[in-house]
View 1 (cartoon, rainbow, N blue to C red):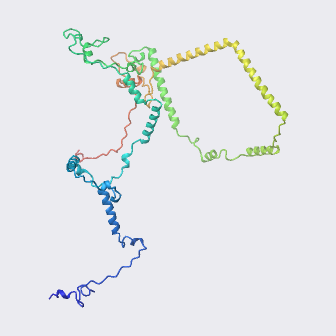
View 2 (cartoon, one colour; view 1 turned 60 degrees about the vertical axis):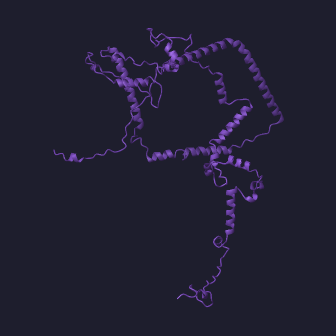
View 3 (cartoon, helix red, strand yellow; view 1 turned 30 degrees about the vertical axis):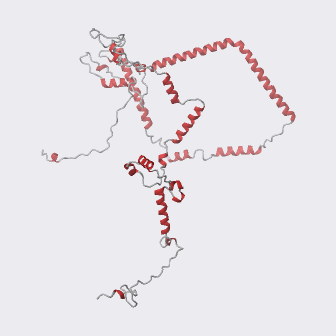
Amino acid sequence: MAAPAGRVGQAGFLGFTPGARGGRKPETARKRVNRNKKKNWNRHSDIRDVEEFLDDVRLQERTAGGMLSEKADDHLFFVDTGDKKKAVAAKKKVKPLRIDLILQPDSKVPAPKDISSHQVPNGRKLKRKLEREEKLAAQGVLPRSERLLQAQLRNKRPRCKPEANNNPGRGFYDLWEDDSLEPSPGEPESWHSQQTKKGQVKRPSRLNVKPSQLPAIEVLNPGASYNPTFESHQSLLLQAHENEVKRLRQEEKLERQVKLPTAAEVATQESQFQELCEGLVESDDDATLEDGEGEELGTTPMAQREKKTERQRKKEKEARILKVKMEAEKSLKKHGQELFQLRSIRAEISQQQAESVRRKEKREEERKADAFKPKRLGRLKYQEGDVAVLLSDELPGTLRNLKPEGSIAKDRFKSFQKRNLIEPRERAKFKRKLKVKYVEKRAFREVVL
């Protein structure tokens, strides 16, 4: 049975919550908070008024672009003149498009400045360049780009205008003549090439200079023939022998350089220690010698510098003046004697001129000789190939029994290197990175022998 509504607020009626009297909530005790601690400032402080003020400030900045209290009256109010036609016309004229209104920002707060967008690459360098150009412009000196442009405008060649087809004085060509359209070597360009502007481009002169004066195919030594004379064959054998001796000497030199020392030459610990102590330990002879020198130095008294008198200073000054006068007289006498040496001087000059001419001729000869030598084009130096020669007992009697020596491809490759057409090269060394893995397949195991 429900309790009457009027008796809920009467005294003595028990509420539903524990500790409630007359249906009212008991009064809670006020919390005691220590406000001296920083952690309790934000938790138990009422800052709603400050937040409302800051929200109001942000709202004014977004909508009006600043505080309304700081705005002038002209920005907040306007005078209504009552001319509606002009207002409507101005409104229609200034009304933006809908898409522009959508794209416009809602806030009037300016965007933060992007520092990186205002930075210019090489800004300091460009600034110094502009300052230098302004300084030169003040002196009347134009920059290099401007000077090149003016020179190009001054030396501008007039453009050749194409000749009109209806010009009666225009050149013509008979297609039914027997001569060819292509010009022969040594003759000027043909009429067809001149009219179509398809003449040959002038070849640069530097392309006509050969990198080497050696012929493309060199004539071999007569001893390399299939039936050579005894003298020519012996000279070719001697040349091959000298090349082989030179190669063996280089190999021996490398072996000596990388050869390990023998047991007698190996340094022992005693010899190494003696070398390290060389100059650090004093011997008995050196000690006795130093003691004797010390005694001699100790017995000799120190030389005391005496003060010069006025007379001595005067004599020294007169001696210096006399020495300067004698040197001046000697130089004058020498210049006077040179007049009588004109013949010897002329002979010396002619000798120097002859020596300079001789040196010039020698340099010219060396330059001509270098034109027939291979140059250093890469990191490797050119090396002559092996001489293809047969021994005396290997010489065939007829051309039919002759066996070829050497390789044509290798000979041409060496010729290119010798004539400075390509740099000397060596065969690339193949280096296997991965190990070879051998797999025995099943089909191989099934084979029955």
